[in-house]
Image (tube, rainbow, N blue to C red; front, side):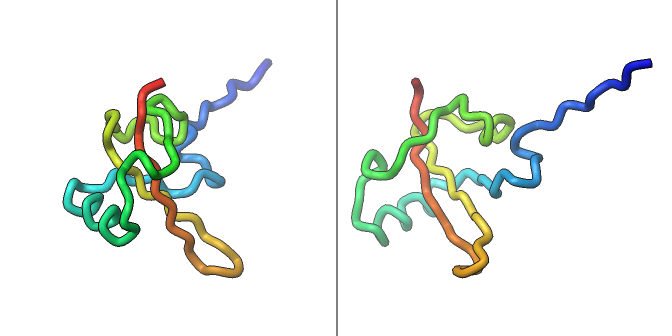
Length: 83
């Protein structure tokens, strides 16, 4: 008898860092802190497997929190775009 493999959603996988949508106010604060425009940030596609299920739309900003052995926690920001 074959066993069924249970699919794991990519955002729930142990090796995928935490992704969260920033509010408009938080996004404005990040842009002000870095003195940049949203399009100056690295892009992430709206259909990226890591952000499926978050309800993102083009124009949103994503905060990615990664744990690091040397830095503790590293924060990255991405701008959501369409393909």
